[in-house]
Length: 170
Image (cartoon, rainbow, N blue to C red; front, side, top):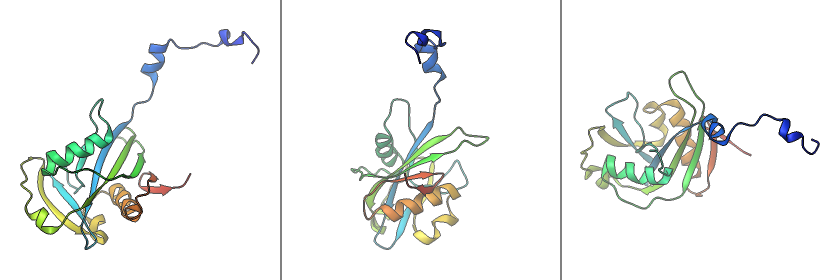
């Protein structure tokens, strides 16, 4: 491009440019597991599938802050989380815009801890430790794929990138 030809290009004013940027929804969940190859799932009151503790990232909130907050709000669990295990790009569908989903390592939990949970959040009907090989029967297929990837990297603490729950390599 020749010097001075940049002026010939129609550039948006900065505020218009910012308004034109794509917005993505974000969610953050927590993988809690026990020593018997089971994953903690929650039964929400507002949707048909089970889920992991977590939820939508609020405005001006970091995903890791969301994960800690949701764990406390949903289950009354206060703990330091481990590293992120999965970052998943989720394509849009007719009902939802595209998004980014994070899964953080919540560490180990045992049956006694689960039995002692005092579920006070009306959004949560029940919790269960579900064998890894049965998780896909309770959760949405995209979450089942994402959890399978999270489970495969939890021992190493590595971060996996996914597209709709399918692990990718860069």
